[in-house]
Structure formats: C-alpha cells, structure tokens
Image (cartoon, rainbow, N blue to C red; front, side, top):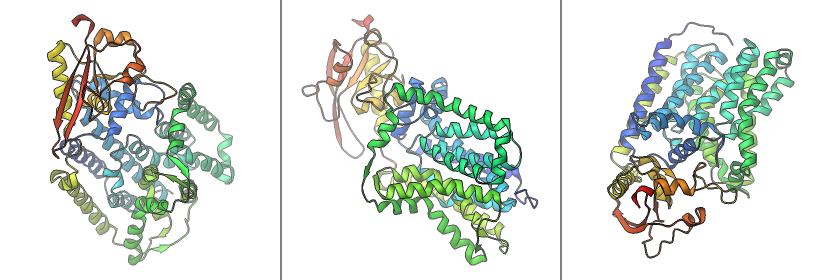
Length: 488
C-alpha cells in the first residue's frame, strides 16, 4: 500500500530514537552485566575458527563476531557483543517501521507498530542470552518488506530478498520456514505468478543458493552436526506447555487489542494483497511449529519462537480496522514513555542485584585475569592456548591474552566449542594452560580429555587453585601447565 497521508513523525526522529535506543541498551548491558552470556563465548570461538558452520548454527553468528577479533586491541569483546546485539535489534526495529509504511500506508500506524515493540521484553533482554535470535530480529522484517516490494514495486528487490533470506537462513535454520509459504504465495496468486516472467527472480534464486551452499558443504563434512544437535533437543510427547511458550512470545498481541478495541478498532480480514501475503507467510510457519511442538517436547521452544515477537505488532494491525481511532499521538507518546520505564526497570534490577541478576558469574573476569597473570609470571610469554574443563572456555573471552581453546573437533563427540586449526606441535611450541573440572584438585584431576586429544602430551607441572564467589561458594580446580618450548 502506498503512503496515503503525510507523516507527523519526522524520519530523523525515528533514526534518533533507534540510535539512542541502541546506545542506552548497549551501555546498560556493558556496564551492569557482570559477564556476557555463554553464547557470546560460543560466538567468539566460532569466529576464531571462521568456518562455514558450527555445531549449532550456520556461519552468520561467527561472521558477525569476527570483526571483534580485529578490533579487540581497541574495543573490549563484551562491549562489541552488546553493541553489535543492540545495533542489530535497532536495525530490525527500523525494518518494522518501514514494513509498516508499506503495509498500512499511514506513517502514524507504522510508528505505532514500532512503538508497540516496547510492550515485549523479548527484543530488549530476553534474547540477550542467545547468539542467533538477535540476527533474526534484524533480518525478518526486511525479508517481508523486500518480498512485498519485489511483487508490487520493482524486480530489483528480488536480489535484496535473496540476500536477506540467505543471511537470515545462515543466522538460524528456522528462517527457512518462511520460504515454502513464499513459494505458495507466488504460485497461487496472479501477482505472484508474474515473478516467473522476470530474469531477476531466477538470478535471485541463484544468489540465495550461493549464500547457503558453503554451509551445506560444511554440514556434510561435519556429520550434519547442527541438525543432530537440534534433533537431540526434541523427543515425541504431548506437550501442552507449548501454549505457554506461545503466550510468552505473542502476549503483546493481547495488549495491543486491549488498547485499540475500546478506542473503536474493529477486527477485520486483511484488506489488501500486501497484508494477505504478509499474514499468510508469517502465520503459516507459526501454525506448523505450534502443531509440531504440541506433540513433541523441546526445551528450547520459547527460544525458537522469540524472533516472531518482532512481527507481532504488524501482524495484529493487519487484522484491525482502525479508521475510527484518532488518538494515535497520545498512544505513541505513552508507548514511548513505557520504553523508558522498561529500560529503567532493567537497569534497576541489575544495579540492585535483584534475584542475583547482577552477580551471575561475577567472578569470571577476575579469575580469568588472575590466571593470565599467573601464566605470564611463570613463563614470561602471552597465554596462547587454554583447555580442559568448562571454565577454560571463559578464559578465551575474558583473559587479557584471549587464548585459543585446545579442544579438537571430532565427528563422534561434536564439541560445541573447539579449535579447527590446532596440533600438538602448536601446543608444544607456545605452551598451554589446562583447567580441571570444578571441584577437582590435582590429586583427582586426570585431564584424560586433553590426553585423548593429544596423544603423547606431557604436562610440565600441576598446582591447585581455588577462589570464592560473591555468594560465598568456594570453587576448587587443578591447573596443569604445558611449558612453552623456549622455557624448557
């Protein structure tokens, strides 16, 4: 739908609001969170490997994290994590506004669809623990925007759709769910069938295939690790909790209805072809996912559904006739004020450590720095490799030298964090620090996993190490050293 009325909200205000949103939320995350989520550690290690896939995701997660390796001398890794996260979210929010302009033709409705995103905590903090969902929040609005513009505006948008679809699919495989229903929309509508007449459409398919092919080659070479991981998360069973999971994602729909219906909005069938395409392509996968998980248990159903929250406000407006509503300005101002309350509440929870939110893994930065200094005092050389127990993975992120993990890849074990480019010679030349599992001392720690990866490795010496968390919990581990070649 073309824009039918002038905008009362200048575009510069939209840009300013989204820029301010990204800056404030980045600062809140960086300065108040005691540590990044574990998914950030995964993303960093996958970026170090720089392969066309990973044990859980395609390659976009590592590709987005890769610049942090180039900038780590000037930009802290955790600052990069939060900044890239909220920059992506703000770009997705911009996409919601642009999609609203194209669907509704009224800037005030587009702005309401943007402001309504403040009703959900998903895009602000619920997706923070994940290294892939924020990318879908960025890409999905543009996926629908470019599809509609390719059908109704110009064939050049097929290329942008192919690029956006390919990158979304390479962020998380769930993005493939929209593609069959896009094809159905093309085959069963007169406007859609016109696409088959244009060469741009076929070249865009080729572009999409070129984007995703490297990942499928990687999957073949690595025993389809990501698919096996997803399969391991699901088992057949009646699963009524899927209803709660969907409510946790789509509750803003209920709130929007409670706001607009008393003001004169009427429930109505989507009245334009653009809206019908959007609703069909977006809701069909949701329905299929709901039915599938109704009969299959999956502990990550809420996580997998979270990115749909970015489309919830636009979907709701497609089913409403809002011609009689006149108080849009007041509602948008209230939603803008609500966004300030949400951000203030998040800062308050972290600052006051409510329910331990501000103290999760509070020890990891200090411990990483201490172990890095311990190594340097011992061998007077940078710490290049760490391995062993779970805590060693965090050292790759928070140790000042940002060492590489020593775990090798194997198609049998499919480790989540691994080093694709390492050998025993590398370890013997540069040395390595190995951490036992928590609760072990040097009498009980055997480091069998390390010895299995590197047959013939000779650990130079061991020493016990312990620390106490802010909660008063004492954690004991054993440190094993492989001295650098020049220090022997």
